[in-house]
Length: 439
Picture (cartoon, rainbow, N blue to C red):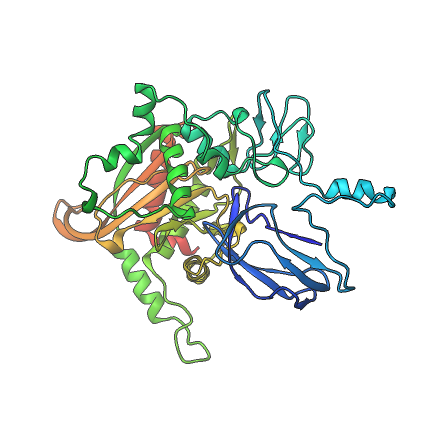
């Protein structure tokens, strides 16, 4: 049985094997971990589903393989040699019946294609007449999502590339090594200067080169696409949080004790902000939406993504149906998601989708900023640091208050200015009167 590199999410094109738990020749049974893989977002252990012997390891630890590639072979333990699907075999002349099987074991040549290719949003390739999956190549060719993005960024036509991946699939390496089209002045401005052009501006000993890992490459591609294709507009408001600070302190002081003698929870301001945005999206349902090409999707629940900083990047795990959860439940969930995010143990369901997002840089002393929308979301709320400032009171007097600057980035295809303003006003009302979040 061939062991394939699994698909860990719709946009994941390849994985890196970081560890093998079994060696060639060892017996395996269902549930035994075979290897650990790491993508740009998650790390995961892959178990065996059958009983047998790990006959061959084709992708060693430390190497990267595309989704669907054969990384190992498990034999049935009978002593029979597994078929070598990576090398041609010839059936003996005395056994003509074996010829079809031998032919099937031969590798498929790189697919040559000249017609236009219409791509699925995720993995499969669509030709004008029918849809072919990764293993069905008559009339079509598969392209990994990473290869597709790299080709789009470089202006390379996929129809001019022959795939070197399994079954002729076009992988990132094929695009990276393909001839680049001539750079027109306009294209050069759109792409930005090349690595050689940038390096030429500096002395060779003035810098060190840091290769892009999978996470940084993904962040660069997604945010470049977002800022180029989403018409952003920004709304900023000052929110007084003295009542919220007091409520948080009282809630933490009154938190019940757990079995170890510690407190059952410790709420942060960010936990209240998550709930406030979720409730605001329910109050302004037109803002709880996403752009979907030829239509707008309006969501029933508020699934809030929260940006978590990682070494070399960030990820946005999602609190699902946040409007239905207490602040303490949101707090516990965010602690779990943050730990698993930093350990790269999130599953695709933990970070895919969502209806809005929050980016909080207040803990770094940032007073105010605007964030780039993370597709498919239509909004992202940027939260700065609280500061003490003088404010006018209702009776005309002046007092000092704790004020938080928040900026809402909006997708103008989904929200008009008035709808964005309504959402920000609803959020401000919940934060400034926090008891309304608890009823």
